[in-house]
Length: 386
Image 1 (tube, rainbow, N blue to C red):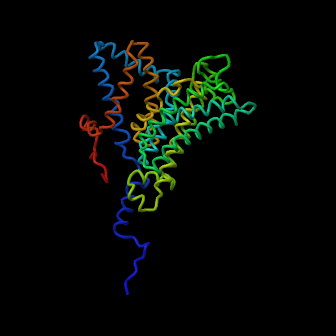
Image 2: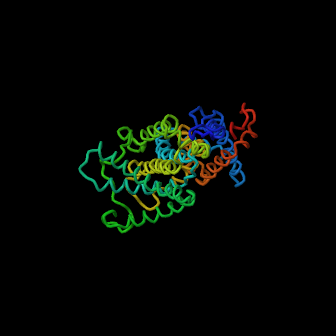
Image 3: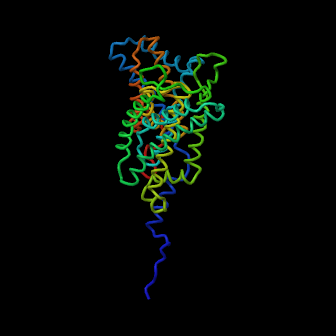
């Protein structure tokens, strides 16, 4: 008689895959050096190179020093500066969280820009078209509309990847472009366009849908709004989702080792769509945050490239929710401080874009950062399992 093989028995190959999956995807502490030390040194090197670029463009050392002082002053030097930093950082953190979740799942979603646009459109429509609701209902409803619209839009790319194998980089680029034209079309609709205006601008949202400014009672010029609490809640929820739930485990397992994930019974197609939808919901919340807290209406280009900046935030934050929070605050500070640099020192605002780009260059090359600052690291740059 031939010996029957138990189909449920774990072969050595399957055991090996499962062990590797557990080692790489089980919740654990992110390496301190990778999450904190490398980004700090990357920022320092970027600022040094920024100064060298200014020297190369005939900016004298005194002006360089004055510009960096203005950068600090404009970002954290006063209550108004902090307000601007938090206001600029909020949508970056929300969209960056979505991108980070996608990166953790092995999906290079670069469609946050389109998801922000679509989420903002849905938020504006709900914000001005529904009347008679109290703030406690209307504002959450508008936020929910933005999140659902972003999730639905991102799910298109997720479905295409799962069903046809279409790469999410290509599909999200196309969806970004489509979202711009969708915004133009929507702003041209008579029931959306502001009364008495011929240019493409939407009606203003109702006061009941606004994210209230936190310190308007103290100074009407302080723009920081209740969206900061939404950001804190989103960071906590994404951290819990990724590191404390089965779904988060499946997200990370699929990103770390797809083969081991399949061996363990994880449905890859479902995970792809779920991850893209969750990422889109967070980006849609970023668009809703801008509409309800800052702009109060939609105009062409209202997203202002936030979705592309969020890619940098997710990379700088090492795709970790806490890291994304601090990276978003840094980029918000650079944006707020950059305006002060332009006023106080006459330095072009484009320098901030250069510094941001340099930060990403050095973040993408951690071995280079370790070579420049070898005394700052005690561990080997090689990571387990690589």
